[in-house]
Length: 381
Image 1 (cartoon, rainbow, N blue to C red):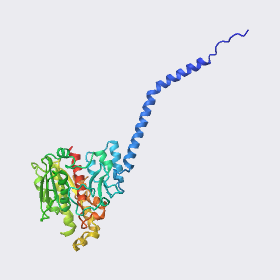
Image 2 (spheres, rainbow, N blue to C red):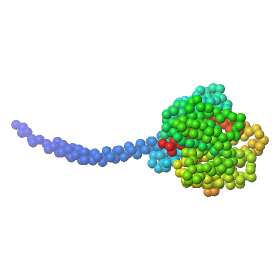
Image 3 (cartoon, rainbow, N blue to C red):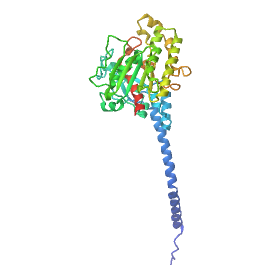
Image 4 (spheres, one colour):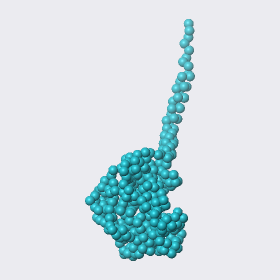
């Protein structure tokens, strides 16, 4: 007769070990979850930065030469180190798209200005004959996304533009670059039926326009730095009521007419920048925008004096004066002026968009006006 043996204790020991392991695992669950969450958060930041910096879509306008600025902006945005003026100072970053292959007419949230796509407010100096000749300025998408920048146009978003511009005063002071930028600005902020063509037999004159929301815009013809200095005089006193936005451009006439050489320009810029800083000290809410000179297309220059004076060497020398952070102190960081880089914007434009070697099609100044509007937008929200 076989006697049944006692049950083996091994299964019980295995069950006990499993129970203890399960208990230890449960006890460690919060730590595991926390570590996993930290890892996923870190991976998200890395992927987000990579996407911001390297993604190339139809909406992106990352240009060789701008990459360093874009990457630095993206890093600061992710780390929360953007100062209040960062969006305004990076608003000039962008690129031109051309024709069908460049998707100039493709819908994009970052398109600020376009021509040849069938929706111009008024014709360009050289009207496009087909979409193949179309161009569009697209703001760099990292800046646009981070700062909430987009096209500002009363024809498309009237109520939003009214809210932005209500009761504001804007003043453009300077040479033809400031005048054409003013034309783009009032086109974007005027009622549809308004005359914004700046058509006059008197080219060198002042202008004034009523904008949407009761805003008012003015242009003062002041081609020399000394002229701009005098034009800003009424705003310097502590009890003055200066415009909310002042846009200044002065260099082309100095380069062309050589009034005492570059030394005269330096002295004029010292006075002008000192007045700008004084107004900024007494009225810190005023936004100052500085337009540098356009890029010169020498093959299109006709007049002998322009061929002689508008050389690359001269243009660089006068631009260096404007950027001087020690003696002039007009633009950031030493001065209050925010640079809208017309030199770079026009250098990127197709050469056929240059009319006479110095001035460009309307779409270029529409882009400059949109950049200026978004700079104002970053302060007026």
